[in-house]
Length: 140
Image (cartoon, rainbow, N blue to C red; front, top):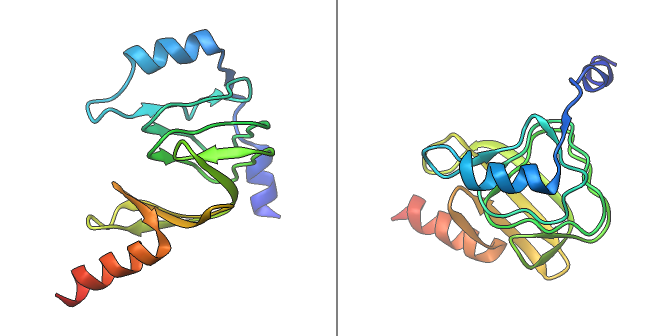
């Protein structure tokens, strides 16, 4: 019940128009190249570029295309026909926190029509490649 109350209490977000998105994308990235859209309602945007952070409680519509290295907050809702990493059709995903070589990275396991993929910091590839890379780094 506490979680439901917390979700209902999310602050109302400003609606992000395509024009505002383009302005932010071109002029408001941090020193690492990331664009933070945590305070925006992104439901009107159909295509996002690379290196974007989304906050909690965001709802996306149908036919959305995300670029590479996207970070999602909690309680994200997706419509139908979602594309991640520029070309993979998303069916579902899991998010884990505190992994990666720096132990502060969000790790995503994407279940896509094309297979299962892992995004862990700058790494993105199939689950098989991820397991092989982890075994190589841990065992050698």
